[in-house]
Length: 369
Ligand SMILES: Cc1cc2nc3c(=O)[nH]c(=O)nc-3n(C[C@H](O)[C@H](O)[C@H](O)COP(=O)(O)OP(=O)(O)OC[C@H]3O[C@@H](n4cnc5c(N)ncnc54)[C@H](O)[C@@H]3O)c2cc1C
Image (cartoon, rainbow, N blue to C red; front, side, top):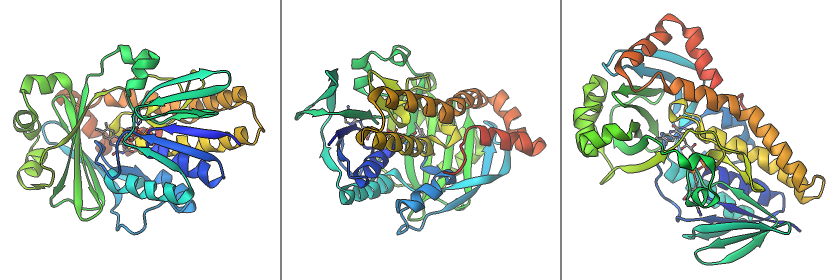
């Protein structure tokens, strides 16, 4: 019987582990943190995931989740427009959703090594040797679901790590007066800030900012005071909300560079294979979809219907077909944001051409699966 190791327990790793374990495959998931924990994320999940989550009993029904159907876009100067979303989505914190999936994975028979970081992976004689802080394990197949940038990417010398990423992400949970149906994207000089509701009548406020803008401001507090609050819509939110964290969650080195879906016989899932720009609100759906696609092929590999070579070839082909154009489109759309002049033009799109605006949303999303 083949055994699988998954490195990283975000959405991609957790969903893949559940699907494989439910097929009777032996799965060990190694995650460097312990659940539940907060992550920097806008926490808006596209409804394209709904049929899959419902059919696999992975939709967290016990939470009353906000249904999101309208998009508001504001320019750095605060001019705004609205767009009804064809597909829409729902809001849930990663704290709750990842924890829910972790519990489901345990029920499905996944073996977890938590608080343990994988430091190297070697492929030798058709077998993987996985070294973590606590153990050395062997596996027939290793899935890398370690997110946008891991120390392992440096260890593997993947091409994209040579380019420094200019972006920093900041997240808060707040209590504020924000309608459930609305996801807002407010521009400011050097970045953009998403606002949408999650479970428990809370609101996620998450922004992406150019590292240079943060450096010039000196601190997150100054950045918010001097830059974000120049957008009157953001100023209103910052000045009329209760901030629920002691300090914001932050991440850096956010890269949208092209990556490989298979590297040294390792199957890459979610952000490890390629990260879509956050303004598309589709990274989580892509992580879940990549886990589903990989799990279907891995089942064939485990029952010897396909060879390792066929698995790698098929996964590469299907990954490129499903995601490559969305990632490219996301990179182009990103250029419309974070600049006063360009964001003023972008904000007119939903007003003057709902068709083009909808096409942009469509091109960064997949069909429901
Ligand atoms: C600012 C911002 C806002 C966003 N907003 C949205 C949004 O609103 N909607 C949306 O759909 N997407 C959004 N995204 C994108 C979304 O967060 C990601 O696409 C998604 O989290 C990818 O899931 P993943 O499972 O690939 O990786 P992750 O969720 O990042 O999980 C990777 C896991 O691997 C673990 N790990 C890493 N290295 C190791 C190691 N060596 N050993 C063991 N464990 C390891 C990490 O601890 C982590 O738990 C946003 C991203 C950013 C940066």
